[in-house]
Length: 319
Length: 319
Image 1 (cartoon, helix red, strand yellow):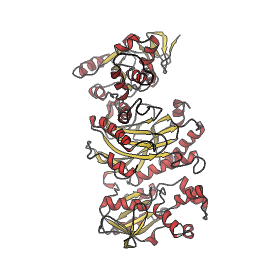
Image 2 (image 1 turned 120 degrees about the vertical axis):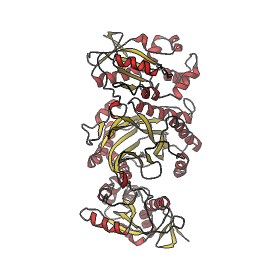
Image 3 (image 1 turned 90 degrees about the vertical axis):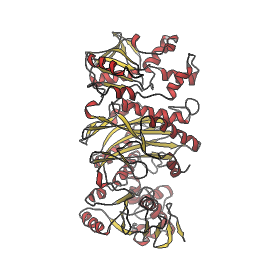
Protein backbone atom coordinates (compact mmCIF):
# COMPACT_ATOMS: atom_id res chain seq x y z
CA UNK A 1 0.00 0.00 0.00
CA UNK A 2 1.32 3.44 -0.95
CA UNK A 3 1.37 5.74 2.09
CA UNK A 4 0.89 8.95 0.10
CA UNK A 5 -1.99 7.44 -1.83
CA UNK A 6 -3.64 6.30 1.40
CA UNK A 7 -3.32 9.77 2.93
CA UNK A 8 -4.93 11.33 -0.16
CA UNK A 9 -7.79 8.87 0.23
CA UNK A 10 -8.44 9.47 3.91
CA UNK A 11 -7.93 13.24 3.90
CA UNK A 12 -11.20 15.05 4.51
CA UNK A 13 -12.50 17.03 1.52
CA UNK A 14 -13.29 19.96 3.83
CA UNK A 15 -12.90 20.63 7.55
CA UNK A 16 -15.80 21.09 9.94
CA UNK A 17 -14.31 23.06 12.83
CA UNK A 18 -13.79 26.81 12.41
CA UNK A 19 -10.77 27.09 14.76
CA UNK A 20 -8.79 24.74 12.49
CA UNK A 21 -6.23 26.53 10.32
CA UNK A 22 -4.34 23.62 8.76
CA UNK A 23 -5.29 19.94 8.72
CA UNK A 24 -3.33 17.21 6.96
CA UNK A 25 -0.61 18.42 4.56
CA UNK A 26 2.23 20.11 6.45
CA UNK A 27 4.67 19.03 9.18
CA UNK A 28 1.92 19.48 11.76
CA UNK A 29 -1.73 20.50 12.07
CA UNK A 30 -2.60 23.98 13.35
CA UNK A 31 -5.61 25.28 15.28
CA UNK A 32 -6.14 28.67 16.89
CA UNK A 33 -6.98 29.84 20.37
CA UNK A 34 -7.08 33.64 20.33
CA UNK A 35 -3.68 34.93 19.20
CA UNK A 36 -1.98 31.66 19.88
CA UNK A 37 -1.78 28.84 17.40
CA UNK A 38 -1.46 25.30 18.63
CA UNK A 39 0.36 22.78 16.45
CA UNK A 40 0.20 19.02 16.76
CA UNK A 41 1.68 16.03 14.95
CA UNK A 42 2.02 12.27 15.43
CA UNK A 43 4.93 9.90 14.66
CA UNK A 44 5.10 6.15 14.99
CA UNK A 45 8.09 3.90 15.47
CA UNK A 46 7.87 0.12 14.93
CA UNK A 47 10.34 -2.59 15.96
CA UNK A 48 12.19 -4.21 13.04
CA UNK A 49 10.80 -1.55 10.70
CA UNK A 50 12.34 1.60 12.16
CA UNK A 51 14.86 0.01 14.49
CA UNK A 52 16.38 -3.31 15.52
CA UNK A 53 16.65 -3.40 19.30
CA UNK A 54 20.25 -3.49 20.56
CA UNK A 55 21.57 -3.59 16.99
CA UNK A 56 20.67 -0.21 15.58
CA UNK A 57 19.33 1.29 18.81
CA UNK A 58 19.27 0.79 22.56
CA UNK A 59 15.92 1.08 24.34
CA UNK A 60 16.90 4.58 25.46
CA UNK A 61 17.78 5.58 21.87
CA UNK A 62 14.34 4.41 20.73
CA UNK A 63 12.54 6.85 23.02
CA UNK A 64 14.97 9.66 22.26
CA UNK A 65 14.83 9.16 18.50
CA UNK A 66 11.05 8.88 18.26
CA UNK A 67 10.46 12.08 20.24
CA UNK A 68 13.19 13.84 18.20
CA UNK A 69 11.16 13.19 15.03
CA UNK A 70 8.08 14.71 16.66
CA UNK A 71 9.89 17.77 17.99
CA UNK A 72 11.39 18.27 14.54
CA UNK A 73 7.87 18.49 13.04
CA UNK A 74 6.98 21.18 15.57
CA UNK A 75 10.24 23.09 14.93
CA UNK A 76 9.49 22.97 11.19
CA UNK A 77 6.27 24.89 11.90
CA UNK A 78 8.23 27.55 13.81
CA UNK A 79 6.62 26.43 17.07
CA UNK A 80 7.92 25.54 20.52
CA UNK A 81 7.23 21.96 21.60
CA UNK A 82 5.32 21.83 24.90
CA UNK A 83 3.60 18.48 25.54
CA UNK A 84 3.61 14.90 24.32
CA UNK A 85 1.36 11.86 24.67
CA UNK A 86 2.69 8.34 24.25
CA UNK A 87 0.99 5.17 23.06
CA UNK A 88 3.10 2.07 23.50
CA UNK A 89 2.43 -1.53 22.45
CA UNK A 90 4.58 -3.86 24.60
CA UNK A 91 5.29 -7.47 23.56
CA UNK A 92 5.78 -10.03 26.33
CA UNK A 93 9.45 -10.58 25.38
CA UNK A 94 10.30 -7.00 26.36
CA UNK A 95 11.60 -6.63 29.91
CA UNK A 96 10.13 -4.00 32.20
CA UNK A 97 13.51 -2.24 32.53
CA UNK A 98 13.71 -1.94 28.74
CA UNK A 99 10.32 -0.23 28.59
CA UNK A 100 11.38 2.09 31.40
CA UNK A 101 14.55 2.88 29.43
CA UNK A 102 12.45 3.89 26.42
CA UNK A 103 10.66 6.35 28.68
CA UNK A 104 13.98 7.51 30.16
CA UNK A 105 15.14 8.25 26.60
CA UNK A 106 11.96 10.22 25.98
CA UNK A 107 12.48 12.25 29.13
CA UNK A 108 16.16 12.87 28.33
CA UNK A 109 15.12 14.83 25.26
CA UNK A 110 11.88 16.25 26.70
CA UNK A 111 13.66 17.95 29.57
CA UNK A 112 16.01 19.73 27.15
CA UNK A 113 12.92 21.54 25.87
CA UNK A 114 10.99 21.75 29.15
CA UNK A 115 8.36 19.43 27.67
CA UNK A 116 5.85 17.40 29.67
CA UNK A 117 4.51 13.88 29.17
CA UNK A 118 0.79 14.50 29.71
CA UNK A 119 -0.95 11.32 28.65
CA UNK A 120 -0.66 7.90 27.18
CA UNK A 121 -1.90 4.38 26.73
CA UNK A 122 0.05 1.17 27.32
CA UNK A 123 -1.25 -2.04 25.79
CA UNK A 124 0.12 -5.50 25.05
CA UNK A 125 0.80 -6.88 21.59
CA UNK A 126 3.31 -8.99 19.66
CA UNK A 127 5.42 -6.16 18.25
CA UNK A 128 6.85 -3.09 19.97
CA UNK A 129 5.20 0.12 18.69
CA UNK A 130 5.84 3.59 20.03
CA UNK A 131 3.51 6.32 18.83
CA UNK A 132 3.93 9.90 20.01
CA UNK A 133 1.67 12.90 19.63
CA UNK A 134 3.37 16.22 20.27
CA UNK A 135 1.75 19.61 20.91
CA UNK A 136 3.42 23.01 20.58
CA UNK A 137 2.67 26.73 20.61
CA UNK A 138 3.46 29.43 18.07
CA UNK A 139 2.30 33.02 17.50
CA UNK A 140 -0.35 33.07 14.76
CA UNK A 141 1.63 35.19 12.30
CA UNK A 142 4.87 33.23 12.65
CA UNK A 143 3.83 29.79 11.40
CA UNK A 144 6.34 28.40 8.90
CA UNK A 145 4.13 26.66 6.31
CA UNK A 146 5.71 24.78 3.47
CA UNK A 147 3.48 26.83 1.20
CA UNK A 148 5.35 30.05 2.20
CA UNK A 149 8.03 29.91 -0.52
CA UNK A 150 8.12 32.68 -3.14
CA UNK A 151 9.95 33.16 -6.44
CA UNK A 152 13.49 34.58 -5.95
CA UNK A 153 13.72 33.24 -2.38
CA UNK A 154 17.03 31.86 -1.15
CA UNK A 155 16.85 28.13 -0.39
CA UNK A 156 18.81 27.14 2.70
CA UNK A 157 19.46 24.05 4.80
CA UNK A 158 20.73 23.64 8.37
CA UNK A 159 23.56 21.29 9.38
CA UNK A 160 24.86 18.57 7.06
CA UNK A 161 22.89 15.95 5.15
CA UNK A 162 22.99 12.18 5.04
CA UNK A 163 24.72 11.74 8.42
CA UNK A 164 21.94 9.67 10.01
CA UNK A 165 21.67 7.42 6.95
CA UNK A 166 25.44 6.86 6.99
CA UNK A 167 25.15 5.95 10.69
CA UNK A 168 22.48 3.38 9.95
CA UNK A 169 24.55 1.93 7.09
CA UNK A 170 27.51 1.50 9.47
CA UNK A 171 25.30 -0.35 11.97
CA UNK A 172 23.56 -2.55 9.40
CA UNK A 173 26.21 -3.16 6.74
CA UNK A 174 29.57 -2.13 8.28
CA UNK A 175 30.04 0.81 5.90
CA UNK A 176 33.71 1.81 5.91
CA UNK A 177 34.09 5.49 6.73
CA UNK A 178 36.05 7.67 9.15
CA UNK A 179 34.51 9.02 12.37
CA UNK A 180 32.00 6.18 12.65
CA UNK A 181 30.86 7.18 16.12
CA UNK A 182 29.80 10.63 14.96
CA UNK A 183 27.53 9.16 12.29
CA UNK A 184 26.11 6.48 14.59
CA UNK A 185 25.22 9.19 17.12
CA UNK A 186 23.48 11.17 14.41
CA UNK A 187 21.30 8.14 13.70
CA UNK A 188 20.64 7.16 17.31
CA UNK A 189 20.34 10.58 18.93
CA UNK A 190 19.47 13.14 16.26
CA UNK A 191 18.99 16.75 17.36
CA UNK A 192 15.86 18.45 16.08
CA UNK A 193 16.78 22.02 15.18
CA UNK A 194 14.53 23.89 17.63
CA UNK A 195 17.38 26.32 18.28
CA UNK A 196 17.40 27.55 14.68
CA UNK A 197 13.62 27.58 14.33
CA UNK A 198 13.37 29.60 17.53
CA UNK A 199 16.24 31.99 16.72
CA UNK A 200 14.67 33.14 13.46
CA UNK A 201 11.37 34.05 15.13
CA UNK A 202 11.87 37.80 14.31
CA UNK A 203 11.83 37.05 10.57
CA UNK A 204 8.41 37.76 9.04
CA UNK A 205 8.15 35.12 6.32
CA UNK A 206 10.00 31.81 6.23
CA UNK A 207 9.07 28.54 4.59
CA UNK A 208 10.32 25.52 6.56
CA UNK A 209 10.22 21.75 6.23
CA UNK A 210 12.06 19.25 8.37
CA UNK A 211 14.21 16.63 6.65
CA UNK A 212 12.69 13.33 7.70
CA UNK A 213 12.43 11.59 4.31
CA UNK A 214 15.49 13.12 2.61
CA UNK A 215 15.90 16.61 1.16
CA UNK A 216 14.75 15.59 -2.33
CA UNK A 217 11.36 14.66 -0.91
CA UNK A 218 11.13 17.79 1.27
CA UNK A 219 12.11 20.17 -1.55
CA UNK A 220 9.48 18.62 -3.79
CA UNK A 221 6.89 19.09 -1.02
CA UNK A 222 7.80 22.79 -0.80
CA UNK A 223 7.65 23.20 -4.60
CA UNK A 224 4.24 21.54 -4.75
CA UNK A 225 2.74 23.35 -1.73
CA UNK A 226 4.10 26.78 -2.78
CA UNK A 227 3.46 26.26 -6.50
CA UNK A 228 7.05 27.21 -7.38
CA UNK A 229 10.08 25.50 -8.83
CA UNK A 230 13.42 25.23 -7.07
CA UNK A 231 16.95 25.24 -8.48
CA UNK A 232 19.54 23.56 -6.27
CA UNK A 233 23.33 23.81 -6.75
CA UNK A 234 24.60 20.32 -6.13
CA UNK A 235 28.06 21.41 -4.96
CA UNK A 236 26.53 23.72 -2.30
CA UNK A 237 24.53 21.01 -0.53
CA UNK A 238 26.43 20.49 2.74
CA UNK A 239 27.86 17.07 3.52
CA UNK A 240 30.56 16.04 5.96
CA UNK A 241 34.03 15.68 4.45
CA UNK A 242 34.14 11.98 5.37
CA UNK A 243 31.37 11.29 2.83
CA UNK A 244 33.47 12.67 -0.03
CA UNK A 245 35.54 9.49 -0.12
CA UNK A 246 32.48 7.39 -1.03
CA UNK A 247 31.33 6.68 -4.59
CA UNK A 248 29.29 9.33 -6.38
CA UNK A 249 26.23 7.07 -6.24
CA UNK A 250 26.61 6.59 -2.48
CA UNK A 251 27.10 10.32 -1.93
CA UNK A 252 23.96 11.20 -3.91
CA UNK A 253 21.89 8.59 -2.12
CA UNK A 254 22.96 9.72 1.36
CA UNK A 255 22.75 13.41 0.50
CA UNK A 256 19.40 13.52 -1.27
CA UNK A 257 17.43 10.62 0.21
CA UNK A 258 19.10 9.97 3.53
CA UNK A 259 16.31 11.12 5.79
CA UNK A 260 16.08 11.34 9.56
CA UNK A 261 18.80 13.95 9.98
CA UNK A 262 16.01 16.19 11.25
CA UNK A 263 17.72 19.24 9.87
CA UNK A 264 15.55 22.00 8.40
CA UNK A 265 15.27 23.08 4.79
CA UNK A 266 13.59 26.38 3.99
CA UNK A 267 13.29 29.46 1.87
CA UNK A 268 13.09 33.17 2.56
CA UNK A 269 13.66 36.50 0.76
CA UNK A 270 17.22 37.72 0.10
CA UNK A 271 16.75 40.49 2.68
CA UNK A 272 15.60 38.02 5.32
CA UNK A 273 18.44 35.69 4.45
CA UNK A 274 20.98 38.38 5.38
CA UNK A 275 19.10 38.93 8.66
CA UNK A 276 19.08 35.20 9.39
CA UNK A 277 22.84 34.98 8.92
CA UNK A 278 23.26 37.85 11.43
CA UNK A 279 20.82 36.38 13.94
CA UNK A 280 22.44 32.96 14.09
CA UNK A 281 26.03 34.21 14.42
CA UNK A 282 26.13 33.83 18.22
CA UNK A 283 24.75 30.28 18.00
CA UNK A 284 26.45 27.06 17.10
CA UNK A 285 24.21 26.45 14.07
CA UNK A 286 25.31 25.92 10.48
CA UNK A 287 23.04 27.22 7.74
CA UNK A 288 23.97 27.02 4.08
CA UNK A 289 22.48 28.65 0.99
CA UNK A 290 21.92 25.86 -1.53
CA UNK A 291 19.77 27.38 -4.26
CA UNK A 292 16.93 29.63 -5.40
CA UNK A 293 13.20 29.54 -5.83
CA UNK A 294 12.35 30.13 -9.50
CA UNK A 295 9.25 30.56 -11.65
CA UNK A 296 7.37 27.31 -11.75
CA UNK A 297 7.54 24.84 -14.56
CA UNK A 298 5.31 22.10 -13.10
CA UNK A 299 6.56 22.74 -9.53
CA UNK A 300 9.83 20.87 -10.16
CA UNK A 301 13.10 20.68 -8.28
CA UNK A 302 16.14 21.09 -10.56
CA UNK A 303 19.78 20.26 -9.92
CA UNK A 304 22.28 22.77 -11.41
CA UNK A 305 20.23 23.26 -14.60
CA UNK A 306 16.71 22.73 -15.90
CA UNK A 307 18.01 19.64 -17.68
CA UNK A 308 18.38 17.72 -14.43
CA UNK A 309 15.28 17.03 -12.33
CA UNK A 310 15.50 15.91 -8.69
CA UNK A 311 12.55 13.61 -8.04
CA UNK A 312 11.00 13.18 -4.56
CA UNK A 313 12.69 9.78 -4.22
CA UNK A 314 16.11 11.31 -5.01
CA UNK A 315 16.25 9.94 -8.52
CA UNK A 316 18.06 12.37 -10.82
CA UNK A 317 16.34 12.43 -14.16
CA UNK A 318 17.90 13.92 -17.29
CA UNK A 319 15.51 15.73 -19.58
CA UNK B 1 4.01 -5.98 33.27
CA UNK B 2 1.36 -4.15 35.32
CA UNK B 3 0.00 -1.16 33.38
CA UNK B 4 -0.86 0.89 36.48
CA UNK B 5 2.57 0.25 37.97
CA UNK B 6 4.25 1.30 34.71
CA UNK B 7 2.25 4.53 34.59
CA UNK B 8 3.26 5.35 38.17
CA UNK B 9 6.88 4.82 37.16
CA UNK B 10 6.84 6.98 34.05
CA UNK B 11 4.66 9.80 35.44
CA UNK B 12 6.69 12.98 35.89
CA UNK B 13 7.19 14.02 39.52
CA UNK B 14 6.37 17.61 38.55
CA UNK B 15 5.38 19.40 35.35
CA UNK B 16 7.53 21.99 33.59
CA UNK B 17 5.03 23.99 31.53
CA UNK B 18 2.92 26.63 33.30
CA UNK B 19 -0.11 26.37 30.97
CA UNK B 20 -0.59 22.71 31.94
CA UNK B 21 -3.47 22.18 34.38
CA UNK B 22 -3.69 18.38 34.56
CA UNK B 23 -1.16 15.84 33.31
CA UNK B 24 -1.51 12.08 33.71
CA UNK B 25 -4.22 10.90 36.13
CA UNK B 26 -7.68 11.69 34.73
CA UNK B 27 -9.62 10.74 31.60
CA UNK B 28 -7.62 13.34 29.65
CA UNK B 29 -4.89 15.94 30.09
CA UNK B 30 -5.81 19.63 30.30
CA UNK B 31 -3.92 22.77 29.30
CA UNK B 32 -5.13 26.36 29.16
CA UNK B 33 -5.27 29.02 26.47
CA UNK B 34 -6.91 32.11 27.97
CA UNK B 35 -10.40 31.16 29.17
CA UNK B 36 -10.46 28.01 27.14
CA UNK B 37 -9.14 24.70 28.34
CA UNK B 38 -7.93 22.17 25.83
CA UNK B 39 -8.20 18.50 26.70
CA UNK B 40 -6.38 15.64 25.02
CA UNK B 41 -6.17 11.87 25.41
CA UNK B 42 -4.82 8.86 23.52
CA UNK B 43 -6.24 5.34 23.07
CA UNK B 44 -4.72 2.36 21.31
CA UNK B 45 -6.42 -0.64 19.75
CA UNK B 46 -4.44 -3.78 18.82
CA UNK B 47 -5.50 -6.70 16.61
CA UNK B 48 -6.13 -9.94 18.51
CA UNK B 49 -5.88 -8.06 21.81
CA UNK B 50 -8.81 -5.66 21.51
CA UNK B 51 -10.54 -7.19 18.52
CA UNK B 52 -10.48 -10.17 16.18
CA UNK B 53 -11.03 -8.95 12.65
CA UNK B 54 -14.32 -10.18 11.10
CA UNK B 55 -15.09 -12.22 14.23
CA UNK B 56 -15.70 -9.59 16.90
CA UNK B 57 -15.49 -6.56 14.62
CA UNK B 58 -15.58 -5.51 10.98
CA UNK B 59 -12.90 -3.08 9.76
CA UNK B 60 -15.47 -0.29 9.96
CA UNK B 61 -16.34 -1.24 13.55
CA UNK B 62 -12.66 -1.06 14.49
CA UNK B 63 -12.39 2.59 13.50
CA UNK B 64 -15.75 3.48 15.01
CA UNK B 65 -15.06 1.72 18.30
CA UNK B 66 -11.56 3.12 18.78
CA UNK B 67 -12.66 6.71 18.23
CA UNK B 68 -15.67 6.12 20.51
CA UNK B 69 -13.28 5.31 23.37
CA UNK B 70 -11.40 8.55 22.76
CA UNK B 71 -14.50 10.70 22.51
CA UNK B 72 -15.73 9.13 25.72
CA UNK B 73 -12.58 10.34 27.52
CA UNK B 74 -13.26 13.87 26.29
CA UNK B 75 -16.94 13.69 27.30
CA UNK B 76 -15.86 12.52 30.77
CA UNK B 77 -13.95 15.80 31.15
CA UNK B 78 -17.07 17.78 30.21
CA UNK B 79 -15.45 18.81 26.93
CA UNK B 80 -16.54 18.82 23.30
CA UNK B 81 -14.40 16.66 21.00
CA UNK B 82 -12.97 18.68 18.09
CA UNK B 83 -9.98 16.99 16.41
CA UNK B 84 -8.25 13.64 16.16
CA UNK B 85 -4.90 12.34 14.91
CA UNK B 86 -4.45 8.73 13.85
CA UNK B 87 -1.41 6.49 13.93
CA UNK B 88 -1.91 3.18 12.12
CA UNK B 89 0.41 0.20 11.79
CA UNK B 90 -0.64 -1.83 8.74
CA UNK B 91 0.45 -5.46 8.24
CA UNK B 92 0.93 -6.71 4.68
CA UNK B 93 -1.98 -9.18 5.00
CA UNK B 94 -4.45 -6.30 5.36
CA UNK B 95 -6.11 -5.25 2.13
CA UNK B 96 -6.23 -1.58 1.16
CA UNK B 97 -10.05 -1.57 1.20
CA UNK B 98 -10.00 -2.86 4.78
CA UNK B 99 -7.76 0.02 5.88
CA UNK B 100 -10.02 2.46 4.06
CA UNK B 101 -12.99 0.91 5.88
CA UNK B 102 -11.28 1.53 9.24
CA UNK B 103 -11.03 5.20 8.26
CA UNK B 104 -14.65 5.18 7.02
CA UNK B 105 -15.67 3.90 10.47
CA UNK B 106 -13.68 6.70 12.10
CA UNK B 107 -15.38 9.30 9.91
CA UNK B 108 -18.84 7.81 10.54
CA UNK B 109 -18.51 8.70 14.20
CA UNK B 110 -16.42 11.86 13.71
CA UNK B 111 -19.04 13.52 11.56
CA UNK B 112 -21.70 12.96 14.24
CA UNK B 113 -19.65 15.37 16.38
CA UNK B 114 -18.36 17.64 13.61
CA UNK B 115 -14.84 16.42 14.35
CA UNK B 116 -11.88 16.67 11.98
CA UNK B 117 -9.04 14.26 11.23
CA UNK B 118 -6.07 16.65 11.32
CA UNK B 119 -2.98 14.45 11.30
CA UNK B 120 -1.56 11.00 11.32
CA UNK B 121 1.17 8.56 10.51
CA UNK B 122 0.83 5.32 8.55
CA UNK B 123 3.60 2.72 8.87
CA UNK B 124 4.01 -0.96 8.11
CA UNK B 125 4.36 -3.70 10.73
CA UNK B 126 3.29 -7.26 11.46
CA UNK B 127 0.26 -6.47 13.61
CA UNK B 128 -2.56 -3.99 13.07
CA UNK B 129 -2.43 -1.16 15.62
CA UNK B 130 -4.71 1.87 15.65
CA UNK B 131 -3.76 4.67 18.01
CA UNK B 132 -5.87 7.81 18.23
CA UNK B 133 -5.19 11.12 19.93
CA UNK B 134 -8.25 13.27 20.44
CA UNK B 135 -8.41 16.98 21.27
CA UNK B 136 -11.41 18.83 22.73
CA UNK B 137 -12.43 22.20 24.15
CA UNK B 138 -14.11 23.07 27.46
CA UNK B 139 -14.67 26.27 29.44
CA UNK B 140 -12.06 26.48 32.22
CA UNK B 141 -14.53 26.37 35.10
CA UNK B 142 -16.56 23.44 33.75
CA UNK B 143 -13.97 20.66 33.70
CA UNK B 144 -15.30 17.46 35.25
CA UNK B 145 -12.32 16.10 37.16
CA UNK B 146 -12.58 12.77 38.91
CA UNK B 147 -11.33 14.59 42.00
CA UNK B 148 -14.52 16.72 42.12
CA UNK B 149 -16.57 14.34 44.33
CA UNK B 150 -17.65 15.57 47.79
CA UNK B 151 -19.16 13.87 50.83
CA UNK B 152 -22.98 13.59 50.60
CA UNK B 153 -22.93 13.75 46.78
CA UNK B 154 -25.36 11.61 44.82
CA UNK B 155 -23.58 8.95 42.72
CA UNK B 156 -25.18 8.45 39.30
CA UNK B 157 -24.56 6.45 36.15
CA UNK B 158 -25.84 6.89 32.59
CA UNK B 159 -27.38 4.09 30.51
CA UNK B 160 -27.09 0.42 31.48
CA UNK B 161 -23.97 -1.51 32.43
CA UNK B 162 -22.32 -4.63 31.08
CA UNK B 163 -23.99 -4.49 27.66
CA UNK B 164 -20.76 -4.32 25.65
CA UNK B 165 -19.19 -7.16 27.65
CA UNK B 166 -22.28 -9.30 27.05
CA UNK B 167 -21.99 -8.51 23.33
CA UNK B 168 -18.37 -9.65 23.27
CA UNK B 169 -19.27 -12.84 25.16
CA UNK B 170 -21.93 -13.62 22.55
CA UNK B 171 -19.38 -13.17 19.74
CA UNK B 172 -16.59 -15.12 21.44
CA UNK B 173 -18.39 -17.84 23.42
CA UNK B 174 -21.97 -17.94 22.08
CA UNK B 175 -23.48 -16.67 25.34
CA UNK B 176 -27.20 -17.54 25.36
CA UNK B 177 -29.30 -14.43 25.98
CA UNK B 178 -32.25 -12.64 24.38
CA UNK B 179 -31.80 -9.65 22.07
CA UNK B 180 -28.33 -10.69 20.95
CA UNK B 181 -28.11 -8.04 18.24
CA UNK B 182 -28.62 -5.22 20.72
CA UNK B 183 -25.69 -6.39 22.85
CA UNK B 184 -23.43 -7.03 19.85
CA UNK B 185 -24.13 -3.50 18.63
CA UNK B 186 -23.21 -2.13 22.05
CA UNK B 187 -19.83 -3.86 21.73
CA UNK B 188 -19.18 -2.96 18.10
CA UNK B 189 -20.62 0.53 17.94
CA UNK B 190 -20.75 1.97 21.45
CA UNK B 191 -22.06 5.53 21.86
CA UNK B 192 -19.92 7.83 23.97
CA UNK B 193 -22.26 9.97 26.07
CA UNK B 194 -21.35 13.42 24.72
CA UNK B 195 -25.06 14.32 24.77
CA UNK B 196 -25.28 13.94 28.56
CA UNK B 197 -21.91 15.56 29.24
CA UNK B 198 -22.93 18.51 27.08
CA UNK B 199 -26.48 18.82 28.46
CA UNK B 200 -25.28 19.23 32.05
CA UNK B 201 -22.93 22.09 31.18
CA UNK B 202 -24.98 24.59 33.28
CA UNK B 203 -24.25 22.58 36.46
CA UNK B 204 -21.40 24.14 38.46
CA UNK B 205 -19.71 21.10 40.00
CA UNK B 206 -19.84 17.56 38.65
CA UNK B 207 -17.38 14.71 39.01
CA UNK B 208 -17.30 12.46 35.93
CA UNK B 209 -15.48 9.33 34.80
CA UNK B 210 -16.18 7.28 31.71
CA UNK B 211 -16.71 3.56 32.09
CA UNK B 212 -14.00 1.98 30.03
CA UNK B 213 -12.64 -0.58 32.52
CA UNK B 214 -15.89 -1.40 34.39
CA UNK B 215 -17.69 0.68 37.00
CA UNK B 216 -15.85 -0.94 39.93
CA UNK B 217 -12.56 0.39 38.59
CA UNK B 218 -14.00 3.84 37.79
CA UNK B 219 -15.67 4.25 41.20
CA UNK B 220 -12.41 3.36 42.92
CA UNK B 221 -10.61 5.96 40.80
CA UNK B 222 -13.10 8.61 41.89
CA UNK B 223 -12.79 7.57 45.56
CA UNK B 224 -9.01 7.74 45.40
CA UNK B 225 -8.79 11.01 43.43
CA UNK B 226 -11.44 12.77 45.56
CA UNK B 227 -10.29 11.22 48.87
CA UNK B 228 -13.80 10.03 49.71
CA UNK B 229 -15.58 6.72 50.11
CA UNK B 230 -18.58 5.67 48.08
CA UNK B 231 -21.57 3.53 49.04
CA UNK B 232 -23.32 1.85 46.14
CA UNK B 233 -26.73 0.13 46.32
CA UNK B 234 -26.32 -3.03 44.31
CA UNK B 235 -30.01 -3.26 43.33
CA UNK B 236 -29.98 0.29 41.91
CA UNK B 237 -27.16 -0.33 39.43
CA UNK B 238 -28.92 -0.37 36.04
CA UNK B 239 -28.71 -3.48 33.88
CA UNK B 240 -30.87 -4.62 30.98
CA UNK B 241 -33.64 -7.05 31.92
CA UNK B 242 -32.14 -9.75 29.67
CA UNK B 243 -29.13 -10.01 32.00
CA UNK B 244 -31.32 -10.92 34.97
CA UNK B 245 -31.73 -14.47 33.66
CA UNK B 246 -27.99 -15.13 34.00
CA UNK B 247 -26.28 -16.53 37.12
CA UNK B 248 -25.50 -14.11 39.96
CA UNK B 249 -21.79 -14.49 39.24
CA UNK B 250 -22.26 -13.65 35.56
CA UNK B 251 -24.45 -10.65 36.42
CA UNK B 252 -21.87 -9.27 38.87
CA UNK B 253 -19.04 -9.74 36.42
CA UNK B 254 -20.83 -8.00 33.55
CA UNK B 255 -22.24 -5.25 35.77
CA UNK B 256 -19.14 -4.32 37.74
CA UNK B 257 -16.22 -5.20 35.47
CA UNK B 258 -17.77 -5.23 31.99
CA UNK B 259 -16.02 -2.19 30.62
CA UNK B 260 -16.25 -0.46 27.25
CA UNK B 261 -19.90 0.56 27.62
CA UNK B 262 -18.56 4.13 27.54
CA UNK B 263 -21.33 5.27 29.81
CA UNK B 264 -20.50 7.92 32.40
CA UNK B 265 -20.41 7.57 36.19
CA UNK B 266 -20.33 10.68 38.31
CA UNK B 267 -21.26 12.49 41.47
CA UNK B 268 -22.85 15.84 42.27
CA UNK B 269 -24.68 17.61 45.12
CA UNK B 270 -28.33 16.72 45.88
CA UNK B 271 -29.42 20.14 44.60
CA UNK B 272 -27.54 19.68 41.34
CA UNK B 273 -28.90 16.17 40.99
CA UNK B 274 -32.46 17.56 40.91
CA UNK B 275 -31.36 20.06 38.28
CA UNK B 276 -29.72 17.36 36.17
CA UNK B 277 -32.91 15.30 36.17
CA UNK B 278 -34.83 18.36 34.93
CA UNK B 279 -32.24 19.23 32.30
CA UNK B 280 -32.13 15.83 30.69
CA UNK B 281 -35.93 15.31 30.53
CA UNK B 282 -36.19 16.42 26.88
CA UNK B 283 -33.34 14.09 25.86
CA UNK B 284 -33.32 10.37 25.32
CA UNK B 285 -30.75 9.75 28.08
CA UNK B 286 -31.13 7.45 31.08
CA UNK B 287 -29.44 8.49 34.30
CA UNK B 288 -29.82 6.53 37.51
CA UNK B 289 -28.95 7.34 41.11
CA UNK B 290 -26.95 4.41 42.43
CA UNK B 291 -25.46 5.57 45.74
CA UNK B 292 -23.84 8.25 47.90
CA UNK B 293 -20.44 9.69 48.59
CA UNK B 294 -19.60 9.17 52.28
CA UNK B 295 -16.83 10.12 54.70
CA UNK B 296 -13.68 8.33 53.75
CA UNK B 297 -12.39 5.19 55.40
CA UNK B 298 -9.36 4.56 53.17
CA UNK B 299 -11.13 5.83 50.04
CA UNK B 300 -13.11 2.61 49.60
CA UNK B 301 -16.11 1.67 47.50
CA UNK B 302 -18.75 -0.24 49.47
CA UNK B 303 -21.64 -2.32 48.23
CA UNK B 304 -24.86 -1.98 50.31
CA UNK B 305 -22.94 -1.86 53.64
CA UNK B 306 -19.46 -1.17 54.96
CA UNK B 307 -19.05 -4.94 55.31
CA UNK B 308 -18.84 -5.43 51.55
CA UNK B 309 -15.99 -3.79 49.64
CA UNK B 310 -16.03 -3.42 45.86
CA UNK B 311 -12.44 -3.67 44.64
CA UNK B 312 -11.20 -2.01 41.43
CA UNK B 313 -11.22 -5.40 39.66
CA UNK B 314 -14.85 -6.02 40.66
CA UNK B 315 -14.01 -8.51 43.35
CA UNK B 316 -16.51 -8.21 46.22
CA UNK B 317 -14.63 -8.65 49.48
CA UNK B 318 -16.41 -9.34 52.78
CA UNK B 319 -14.87 -7.65 55.81
